Length: 369
Image 1 (tube, helix red, strand yellow):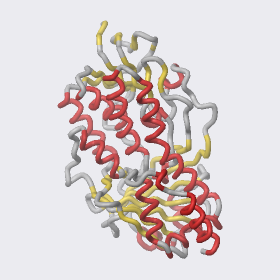
Image 2: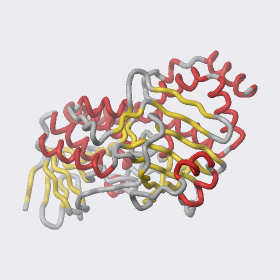
Image 3: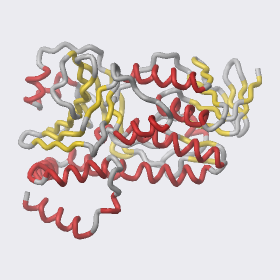
Image 4: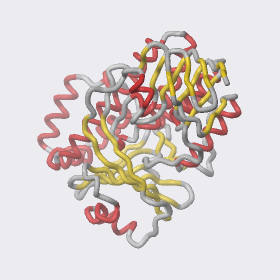
């Protein structure tokens, strides 16, 4: 069967669905294809930073209070230091991935987006996408099919190298959250990311370079977390995935654009993944309406720049205990600095606002910390 759809999105994860909603709201007819069938789950920190929440609100998407936990900032913790910074007059939201996916599907269907579940793209060319049952012609093709994107490979947009590959293992525990912030706990060779959740639950993600390091072994490096989580039964099975810094030289080619993890990734410890894709969706929809993907190409680089910078900083901290201890000690004795860093991290303050004098002052304080 031959079908015409102005926009075809391959991949029905959060990035693809929000991209579809954004395009549909600008008057384009959108069809989303995915070889899987819902519900979808994925190992991730499940937090949406304030700029991601704002992007959803721009599209009229609000997450119900009974499903989403508002977290107010970030805390970094290691064996000697603990420092907290809050978002400026904003909150992030954490929501179980399965719930988030269903909420986004419901919004997309209300907006008029069509879905083809269990529809694998078997053939792609510059005019059409073919599945076993249908043949779709399109104006725009969006690859939202994840880290191992087939659309990216077909469009010749693969990166030449993937940097800093690590492994993440995520699960949930039935426990009342002890904090209203997301926490990153640091130890030698790994981090544990704690996300407060609704329903008397916390999300726990272990991230390291060791593909065999799971929660039961990693927790031994974190006495505080061992006391909190010891003896608490997990409510979900442990799911694993890779995480890496993957930077593409380009995310568009002709009438093809990539979004979400298909368009590049940052390390999961930054918490940027979902928020980046939601911001990208707004820019991509505007670019298609202008019929100029060069706008999206430029905007994508700008949106990703802070996350890439923060990834490099956090990976440096994860790989060098001396740098990590010095950094956290400096942030603890200068909490205003951590607040400033979080404002840059969330896009409230531009990175360009940091002058050479501040960098010199930071360097001096770092060496003395």
